[in-house]
Length: 556
Image 1 (cartoon, rainbow, N blue to C red):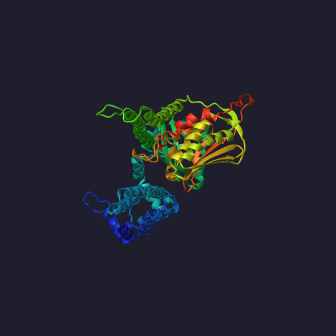
Image 2 (image 1 turned 180 degrees about the vertical axis):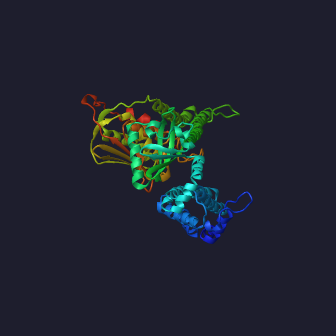
Image 3 (image 1 turned 135 degrees about the vertical axis):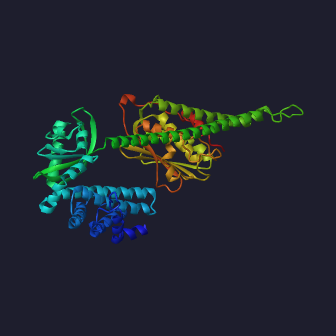
């Protein structure tokens, strides 16, 4: 970068470089004089390139193009015996090549070289167009006018070999076009479209006609129109084209006219579309890879979740049947064995049942078969009953379970079974990840249109970056098979789905420093009185067995 600034600020050095690029004839002699090179223009061009590298883009600065063009053209007029547009273009190409070579010689990375050389290319594209227009408009000076007339054939040849379509419009009609312009409209010869309006060449509706007229008015008023993209169907064969057009005002046969330089960008748009498709396919592929990774992790977790309780059951059964090898009699009385190991077998059966239930419910949700049965009931009483039903169990783990509410009762429509499932899952998680002597808080807040139920613990907490991930299916904060706490990674995903089926949402409180707090927000909706729930929930019947299932993966 240091060398670049050193050389790009050295006008005399650049002048010598440009001189070395001057076109030579077949005998190797220079046909352009060194005097044609303008030091003032070099300094202005260098400043623009340096400003771009430093983050300033001057591509929209018409004043710079006008000043540089005037400097170079006036300098040429001082020394040139002949003057033409092609002559001017040759000079500009020498400037362009010198600056691009200078950038390519520096130690930039490929990306930076590409960006800077692209800028230089676009800069000189605009500069050359302004210079060509200036060269055409120099007719005020007799010498320039004579030289332009002498080189009219060269000018026309230059336009004819241009790959971009060139149109000159006078009074809404095509007064001139090159071969590329005729080809773009679907014709062979330029003469075939001269004298025709755009409406005769293009399939346009009233909106397009209005747009074309507005753009022509802007061009005539401002002197030029920045590049704009247009889409149209050409009338001759109905082919759809996308083009980019730059417009400026020129003098044509003594009258104001609009010069359009039009580039067919259909292929570029097609490539951009293909690139977009590739990006979409790549994104889909990455999502598929991620899903397959999660699925692999899930099956690994499920295998672990199935194997652990089965091993416990099998181990307990083996201990029940153990005998003395020498005397072939049982070491422990059968009744004592059953009494000792039956709870282990039963707990692990509950654990397997919980896993299967979660898998079945997740599958039903995916298939759209799991429904909720909304009934009007007191949400405060239902949640309080659930908390009281697990209080003894939580206390046996050396934890405090504290329930509080800012409203005594709140009747609304909800599915009591699903709420029970949600609360038991969140409380069991809180117990699982909280050490002895910790606390678990369950609170209810009335927000008029919504009810907020929170479950907070003083446990190990969840990292902030994992807050959203914990609700994803198969997701676990600790994914290792040697983790200290059990779980399949689908419980919170199921909870989120059940809350969503109530029209609510669940999220983690980001402001909690110690432990974690899950917040459930449910909309307050009341059904017709005919649907009011008249069931009297019996804790012993409804909760005890489900509590054993939900808390089955917490070992003493």
